[in-house]
Image (cartoon, rainbow, N blue to C red; front, side, top):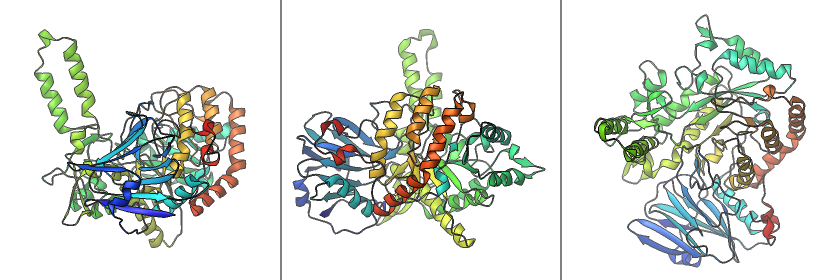
Length: 558
């Protein structure tokens, strides 16, 4: 067994790998790839015979990724189709199963493009900008895939351990707007004799979409309604509020004030706050890569922790950008210059395309800057585009670090639930993930199944998809079938978008079937949690592809 490390230029340190390895001469890499360096871009290529390609964590397609194209660039886009190249996460670990099977990890927060036999069925091509480390894991074994994964997981550190209660029944909906809405859900579950362990608060429960707040329905006589939280504790229900990445620009809002005071925000090239539009409207992007931004945002969790809240989901942390003032103004100027007397269909398409380009605009990402002490030896200012995939990773690390501090200050030893939409390898040590805004499609149910082993390979054990799909209208048949898969995934959450019909368990007609499925989940919980802890401790998988056990059976490949 050998782990070979190769360096390409001055890298941005990610701390994805926790073990130290000596650098090797690049000539050794020629045994695995043809290597080219042109204009600062490294190209790795390799001829493919009957090779299979596994890995890349959160992505579309089957378990075997051969014949596909992917791009590691965390992307906020709920339209998850088979031709998507990027989802919400970047997991640059893959296994090339061939005569001499080996693993590859590209340790970079930059964009990585993969052509895994798409342009040429018999050729693999990987491209990324200079400034990264490449690891090759080469093991001679009768089960090389499993042994490579074990070695890789040792390289990147132990996976996050969620509390036992986080494996219970979770109900969520973007659409609960008040304390009364939450109480109605709780009472509905009680009336139908359905178990409930976690109840989620989406953005409508916040005060003007401000992190670490509740809206006025959660207050009584000018103070937070402690009786509501006491009742949750008596019912053994954990309230899980959403924590979005962006912070509302608002005088008097504690988090905004602290970030401004300590300059813990992302900036433009001149050092001014880079203002973007997300759910709260004009917002700061906390600089989670900087010490000040990370610590200030981490301290924000105290508002919730002091209420006894011990679970959180981080969202919109690719980061999602709805707009910036720059491109809104450009669009407005374009509209002013349109000759509406001579308007034709091409003008319509130009306007449509300009609207679509406002959201998550690449030029916006390239206009944002961070202070990151691990960026370069002689300069701690780094362009966001070069560290884009680290943003969600550093957000959950900020939370994790504060949880440890909070435990120490309060002399407690408590586990917290934390999972995120955006991720990069390294964040697996601090949180779980869910697979983002899926839809009520049967093929998304299949994608959930096929994605789980790839996520496990990259260290994400506490994971799962929104049961029944987040978007579109789910049939009760689809919900029930999806529950049949969900009872085996660590995160077992029913979550729905606000503009589709509700599919809360207590609102369904076949509650007897749903109750039976939930009872099976409870019966399996000791086994599932035990296997989960074993997978963490042994650096192994919860979900193992059949092709790793039956390597010569082509039926198992996908």
